[in-house]
Amino acid sequence: MKLSDTRDIKATPGEVWTAILNPEVLKECIPGCESLSGSVAEGYEAVVKQKVGPVSATFTGLVQLSDIVEGKSLKISGEGKGGVAGFAKGGADVSFEPIEGGTRLTYVAEASVGGKIAQLGSRIIDSFAKKLADEFFTRFQEAVEEPEPAEVAGEEGAGPEEQKKGWFKRLLGG
Image (tube, rainbow, N blue to C red):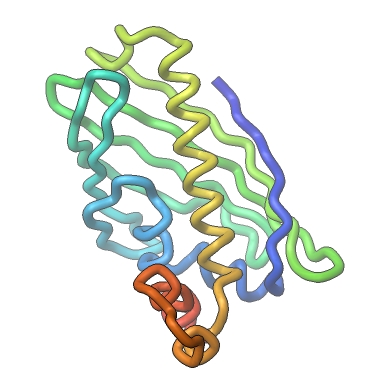
């Protein structure tokens, strides 16, 4: 199954590129990610907990960034094993293009599963894969577009959610 989408991010291409290479940002953007360690060059070991229909599993696996064209494009790919639940693997070709007011991020993603999860049927799995891809890129867009921490700290009555905003900018050094 293939999924594709385009997002216009209100940040410079340099900021978007820095964010996509930052393991802390990736960890926060991957739905269900409990841990992520490693490097861009060698890949990241990840532990991700997910529930697909009635099947819950903790997947352990590898996330790699490859086909890197500095500031323009890369491929994110991952493969995880969830014990008796089965396995999941997928990837996304991601490209970045400067536009007025920011950066256009375009992705084409593919995913596949096997084992017990595959028995749920393609409709459930396709819907779940679309939801995961959309959630990852929504979180990523929010991470890059968040206001500066000082802007939130000064807001009267800022609750926990508002205080959390700006967290990603701090990760990016912004």
